[in-house]
Image (cartoon, rainbow, N blue to C red; front, side, top):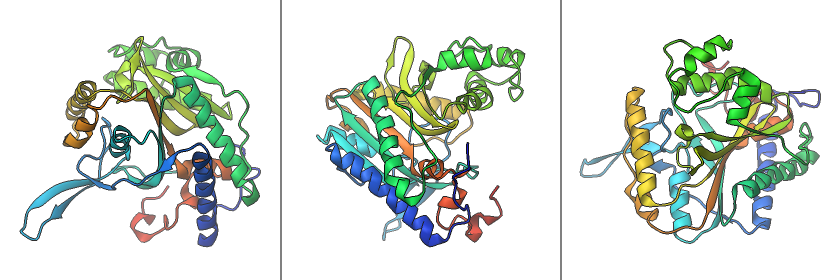
Length: 339
């Protein structure tokens, strides 16, 4: 990243608040002008998410009678926002806190972070990529008066399928769920991969060691068409997940899906995720019956995107991470663990 235009990393708290408020105004202006409705959904939830490898913050609600209900802090507002889609809100967005546990503390990570998530029905894969780039351009313009002018988004954003990226940047022909990926990655010089790594572990190590640094050669880039095993709740078509991630200077900024419709399909994916969590030694999380009931409603084609507000602000400001832009990050609870 070019930091020649970056501001002071140790900003006064008042400046941090002002920058964050300016970015939020730009985001709201973009979506409000396109007919989106801003909504709010719970942070305290029964089901925090469906991701295989995330760790969640767990707590409990206690009734006056002594009953206890296990609850979590959400990792994403996805499940409630999709219930809003099913209720007829077909263009929605939200800016709010999300939470991820165990190790989520570093230059680009914090246990509590701000997420922008938006959903649009009646769109397609290509149009949603264009809308994501348009949002970033709008935010660049909105932040320029604040001196956050460290980013230029080209008219055409380079796109790489995951298969192409593995071949071009790592010299690996990617085959989904190939148990030999670890061995082939080691032969290709991916030093972090161990011989006994399973497909998922080897896949993510190749991404981190080879693909993401190569994407950093482009100011912005889109990585799309993930292996079907990495679909989460995205549609799978022609053997690939219709999912894309938007990168700026090699930093993952957002994660978008063409959303999987139907109760049965979503329930099957969630059960598969639970099995994989168990195999990875992670605790099970309960299903959300309200979400599954909502997925019984026939929705038009729909896409959703989750974007890290803290990361977006950092790349706009030219900072080397989010540390100087999260209020109270230097509080005593985190101080001994910061990089």
